[in-house]
Length: 210
Image (tube, rainbow, N blue to C red):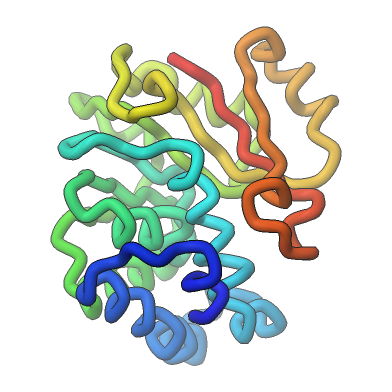
């Protein structure tokens, strides 16, 4: 938790309490359903929570914005972002039932009223539209864009960026960006420039505008 407070200082008491509860909740769920690797669970706040919040630094979602988290797993980046933005609506989607069960369980336990979950694929959200899609290391960029492009509406529901796709990725992304066909649209930031911790040296935030 200390590493979160190293970079953020303006949380409400409710938000602080919600963030503090995450460690015990994820450790408890991980004993039943392994959604976070054993070596990462002890670094939950750095490798999962703070990593997710890199999106919040770059994109201040407006009140009432609708955000879909594709392949949320146990709730990342969706749950940390939902704590950070209590007036933004989040839909957490995953095709693996046991993972979405964890995300829903954690959200319920900490009283997140702005989170809903869907066991399925984002393509099944027919009739729904979103201002932003977020994701973390789920699929190649081209696939992510193909899945969500039709559901994202044009506009600008953040201070900094027009509506679009924001994803957390790692490693050498040049080939992936080229193969996506989105090279002319993509913007990228190094997470290490946002949070100068060694873990983030080869981690990136990738953005594609609608």
